[in-house]
Image (cartoon, rainbow, N blue to C red; front, side, top):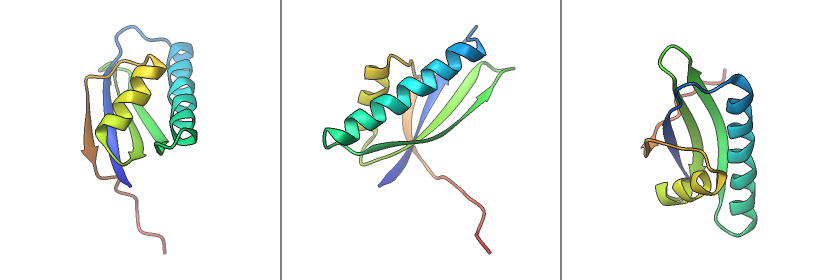
Length: 90
């Protein structure tokens, strides 16, 4: 599977709302996977000073990630393929 990033601009979002959005994205990813379209939520980073968030998902297509986020009701600016650069395991 490929990694995709959902970019978000979330002005005025509270920590509670951010947590609820994350939970919704995870829930809808699990639903999509159970229905036969594998989408796995990986992690998110939020930059409060910019009101921006980047959420990483594993999936076969950007469209699958868009569908999950639409179903979760979490807005995004765009969904693009990304490289998840993790440090090497020694």
